Structure formats: C-alpha cells, structure tokens
Image (cartoon, rainbow, N blue to C red; front, side, top):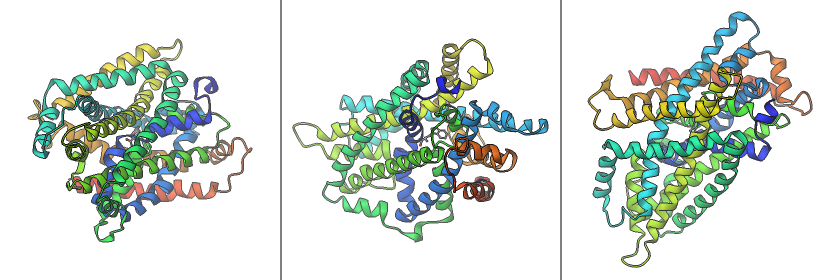
Length: 459
Ligand code: TRP
C-alpha cells in the first residue's frame, strides 16, 4: 500500500525531503546566526550537530515512518510492545501540534516573502535609502490587510500542490523547483562573490573566531540543525512513510543532510559578500533579508539604464519563495495525511486540505495581526507572534525530538530497527551499533541540555 501512495523514485523522494529541509531556515536564518556567533567557529559546531545528532534524528523518523507506513500518532502506536506503552501516541500528537504551530508562523514570513517578491518585480524599492526601507518594512509588517492577502496567496499555492497528491503534487513540484532553486542560488553567489570588497564577507562567514562562540552559540547551532533538517515534529515520519521500500535510509539521509547544509552555506555566500561590498551592517539579525538586502540590491543599480540590482532582488525573493513553498508543503502534508488516516475509508484529501488551509489561514492571520493592530494583546509581556515563535524555537522541537529518540532507542524492538535499516537484511549496516549509541545516549543528553538551558534562559 505504501508503495502506491508514496514517492515513485529515490530521486523524487530526495527532492521532496530536501525541499522540506531547505527553507527559510537556510536562507533567512542560517546566515545571520552563523555571522552572529563567530562565523567559521559556529560552522564547525553546526556541522558536527547536523551530521551526528540531526541526521540520527532524521534516520529515526524515517525508520518510524517507513516501518509502519503511517503518520506520527499511529506510527508511535504501532511500534509499541505493550498496551501500557500506547501512551507514546501523545508524543505523536505533540509533533502534530508543533508542526501546526510552526506552519502558522512559517506562513506569516512566507507571506512577507511573497509580498517582497511582488514588490521587487514592479521595482517598488528602487531609490529608497536604508531608513525608507526599514520604515517600509515596519509599515508593511504591522499593517492589517496586506500581509494577510499575501499569506492567503501563498497558502493557496501550497494547498493546490497538496491537492495534487504525493506523486503528482509534492514529488513533481519538488523535482522541478529544487534544481531551479540551486541555479538561482548559484547565480546570486557568483554576483555577490565577484563584487569589489566581497572578501570581507567571506571572512565574516568562514574565519573561525572562537571568542564569539558562546554557550548560547552552541545551543543555537543545535537548534538550527534540528530546524533546518525539518526533524523533531514527525514531518519526516510522514515523508518516511512515502519512501521507497528499497531505499537505503542512511544514504538518503546523507544526501538530504549534505544538500541542506551546502545550500545554507551557499546562501551565506550569496548574502554576506554583497552586504560588505555595499557597506551595510551584517548584524541585521532577522531583519537582514527584509531590511538590509533591499538596500544592498539598490546599491547595485546604475544611475540610469537597466536596474540590474533590482533584477537580482527579484531573483533572490523568488528563491526565498521557492524555498519556503517546498517546506510549507511538507508541513501542510503532515496535517493532511494525519486527517486522512484518522478518517480512513473513502479518501477525504480534498475536504481535509480545504479545512486545514482555512484553519491555518485564520491562525496565521491572528499571528500577523498581533504584530500590529492587535499588538496590545500580550502573553507574559510578549506579542502572540513572539510567544508562538518562542514555543516553536525553544521548547517544542527539542521536546518532540527527545521523545522520538527515547522511543526508538529504548522502547522499539531493536531487531525491528535493524530489519528496517538493512532493508530486511539485504544491505550491510556496520554502523548500526554507532547509530543506536547516538540515539540512546548522545542525542537525548544533548537535547535535554538544550531544553533545560532554553527554559532557564527564558524565565
Ligand atoms: N526545514 C525548514 C527550514 O529550514 C523548516 C521546516 C520545514 C521544518 N518543515 C519542518 C522545521 C518540519 C521543522 C519541522 O526552513
């Protein structure tokens, strides 16, 4: 059954999973935290986390998904060995709730991205200086209607892909868009890296400065590794259930992790050399993309003639829309697939998709309004947007990841894991013991540290 409902080929499966992993996290978030926490030093720590803990989690989710062919709540339920352990299904539920909340936030930023893409197409930022561009962003992101309209446009496209189904929607779109994304990114990298003064950007991004790498930076590296690989909320359990039965799970995970990491590094190369070359502040933080970059692109426009900088600006925001789209697709699919399994029998995909999209639109509209007109409503002194952002970045993903590794490492039958990873004994897995060690000890310990420090710091 999972053969026909899943991805049709290994390439399609990898394209879809890379699509999920490569998102705003790579292009919007990675470059600024990498620069902020000491460039090359942060990169080294990040690489260790991605390839050991992040990838172990990805394999964990793939095993759970492909073994059971089911969505998170049911996957947990099917893998327990005694009725008492059925309580683990709440870990699946927690994942579902987390992916729902992440999607709501993701849609707000994706809406901004779509708006900026549209604006860059009509040259709306041409001639604005950095103060005017910052004002423009503040005005736009706090206004009531416009952000919601763009959230709706973006959601409509995402929903349409989901309606197309796993093979004809998700897989087909990912196979086209991921190569396009790479081409656009390489174009931007070449432009940025060949600007006069670009070398300062390379130094900022790659030169290891261990004095800047604080404990906080190490925690940020692990958090970013989980977020970037899309692990920790069962989305990869759903994609795992669509993976071809004869796929080598280790190889697939390595492909996804390498592509995700390379694209994050390329995004840094597309951004920082250009920022330095135009004399802008690299420490723009989250506002880097929406407030600093339009100024950078403006500075590439000649006084008269073709506004070449603005053309690069359109390419950049198109790239960001594509990255956000394939990630949002995976988050929405996790919700829709759950709905389908919950109400099994006749397929309810169309109805589920519409209902979930409407719910998502309502929630992200509320989050968007909390940045502006409804900003007076606060939780613990934070706007609703900041509150959900904190839940999503500090508490829920590490908690869900912790549940997954403890479950696989300590509850699931070891022979079942070995059988799934070795494709029923047809491929050698000399790394199995090392993997179990990571899942049973290293990953839980690291996740507990992240979780506890995150909680303590936020009190
Ligand atoms: N990985 C995506 C990014 O880097 C975000 C994302 C998509 C995600 N799906 C996810 C994060 C599932 C966690 C879980 O932008």
